[in-house]
Length: 436
Image (cartoon, rainbow, N blue to C red; front, side, top):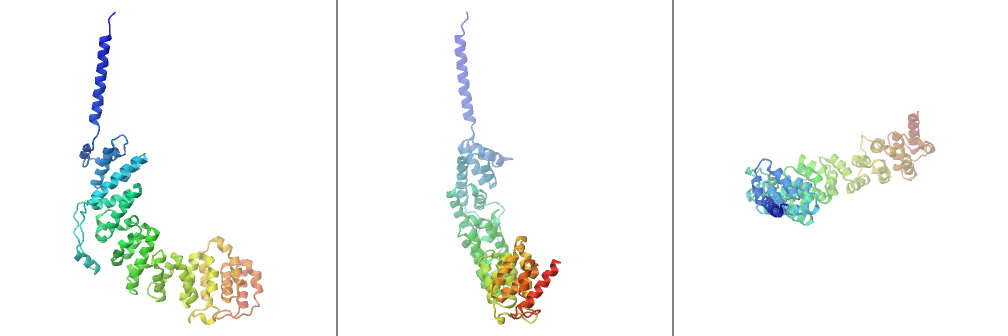
């Protein structure tokens, strides 16, 4: 029989040699960081780099280098999209850390143009300043954009480092720098730390477009920062008072925090242009704004009192009616209504405001509110309760109202009735007609 021992040994040797050669070929073909350089400017190069960066089968140094090249080329939007594709949290954090290291290196280039001292002085004096901006991109500006785009992927340490860069970026030459980066400064403040608004205080105080700037800032900052924005704008408004231009006035009356309440109050107290909008702003703010409106109801007379009451009722509905009534004075001299108005006009007007702004459930429950007001030994509360019962058509109170028709308590400043009994009779008649 022929022996195959020799040929079997030879075959085994060939297989082993082939395996070694294949392994060597795999090792030789494994991608290296240097291999990525050709993809910087290749067609669809960034998409390919993104794919390799997200691929856990690629070597770590290749994945990191792919992230670095994207940032170096200013293709910052690819970085968060790539990180979103990474399945393992540890891998994602590793790549995000590589991104932050690259961002810091780009930031250190400090290659953006700057305003001269002469330019800055011109801006402070309200002059138009033109700066020639080269067409190329800037590494430092790309670093800023990358921080904003990738923020949610950074760990706490990286976010802290990013905040320091953003604080530096927003602290000067804001009109220029908001043109250099794709991300406007107003959108960066939220990530630049709680004191970030202090870094742009000079911008808020000097810009020709304070409303445009504030309108962008307010929805893109924290509540604490929004308060600080309003405080700075209020400070500027006070310095320019009462001659606010339309931009500044709009920045004031569209405030959303208590930081603007002192200046809105001053607008009303001094009865300057825009005071009607100031009433609405106080109502929109709530909190200290509502407290100021209640103070005006209690302490002021005439149109200012009733406008404050109307804005409160428009904002809060009928729930605020009893509070307003209790603040009205019993002294008839406490009403300066003018020659063209009576207490009838104002009380019916605010009752109409209360009805317009109240939800269906509150209107249906209005009888309880009016009944409680009638229990008060306070004639302004009685007047408001009866007037509002007419406006709301509160038939549930008819029996009680009819019992008041003999009440001879005199009412001052009323045009159509002289006593509580007269008003009760009119109210019952109106409710009866509405029921029919």
